[in-house]
Image (cartoon, rainbow, N blue to C red; front, side, top):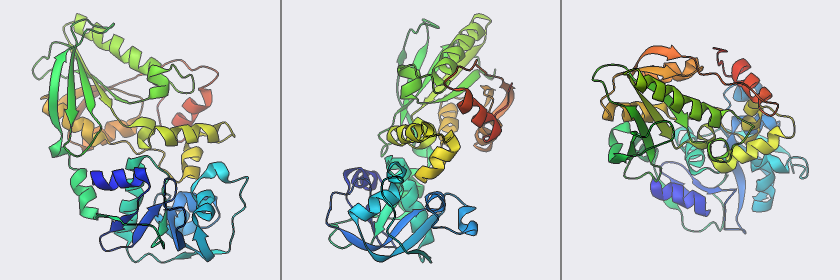
Length: 345
């Protein structure tokens, strides 16, 4: 699995067990490769008017398209990348083909998301080079949360609390390392105040005004510090899943589309990516390793409450976590409310 992700990032083909060889369009180094077929997501196919209504109803399903002529890498790139939509008219006609290997096709799109690349492949390309073998079972094994373990822990004084403790978690075949910051003294079975915070380089580090991630992170730490002063405790879970799980580069691609007038959900769909791909089972496993069975969850997202509950954590209380908007993130927050079901309080 780790080798397959590395292959996609380097632009090498992968060989699906029970399916074809797939060459990632975005990163491909085999510039002379050609293919009669491409694999893309239904959301991207619908944007390009290449999917019917039934296919478009399941936006993250795989769609296999065939061209009238062989796709070169140059032909394939505008199909993969919405940044090229306006400057590269598509060379049709195209038709959608039946997929005889649906499980492997879905696995390929998921591998692309994990690798942080656009979900588009040339299928059984000529002159693509040696392929890295991968099976759908590899993906299932990689997703097993039982393999996540505590790597180390240390005291970490932070501005909100100078007695905080930081704990690092990792899996053997995953380069991402998640962390938990514990504020206050763990109180046996007393549910801590918990915030599940997904990594946001632009908001947390650079102070981006396009989202509310940075202010939410700071406010959560302050709330946990107050909780500790009252005899309680808190846990911040900082999850390495940038851009709601689509990766930093794809998040920035979505930003570019937002500048063209699309909202956050529409931008992800044009990229052929999910608008929500975060892994909350990892958060549940982190809490389990900390011995936490019940929490008071800071969120305005009912789906987050449902996801963490489904993963086996008791959410004894949902604590509202709303920050003021600004001129740059008003539409972002409205989209979270209107399309993603976030509550006002």
